[in-house]
Image 1 (cartoon, rainbow over the protein chains, first blue to last red):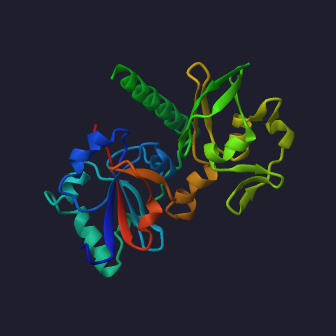
Image 2 (cartoon, rainbow over the protein chains, first blue to last red; image 1 turned 60 degrees about the horizontal axis):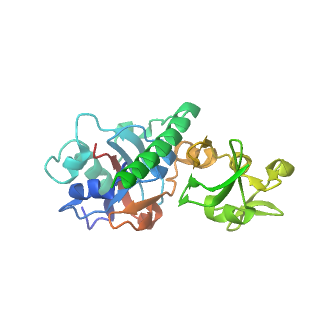
Length: 134
Length: 137
């Protein structure tokens, strides 16, 4: 589907680029790392894997959906390619969204916002600790 | 009152000199731009051509600079302070966070590529895309 004005953008919720690199081997689309937890905070992503469909005008056409029981990453590498990918194809080729595209996403509540900040402090401290140990 | 290098985790990570008044981090106003991306100007807190008016201007001021928590508050950004470790984490503004939920417009975010370069999600604007969040752990 590469020619059809479509791309996958994989973003690892991780701090360690080296840990993500093996996942990106043989993958032709962008693999990025949300080291500062900016994306997960702005998109209220609390679970992985989560998929957000965005159209060419930056509209979120199918908000955060967990894809339980399937490793999306494996799926996009072509090892598994059914179900969800069929819906994606229908969207790309015909502009038709699945019936569940219109669901609401809950904004992070204040506790979750604080939890994100705690997580950032903790991962930063851990990185510092690892650097000291090394 | 102690002055110390402090690590501030906001959109970017910066390590300015910070005066600690108990658990309140006080910064030089000229550092706000690099710390938060917003500069304190007569018309308010400004980023490019956008300005947020500050209702309690005196509340930002401190003998040694400006109170970073009060500035973040004025911008609607949540703050978490670890005064012992000299660490401050500042989250995205509430309004910005709600953009995805209310307006259904994909917010821009700054991430790293595997070479360690800063990239913006908006680089892929203009194309249909699936944003897939995953984790290696």
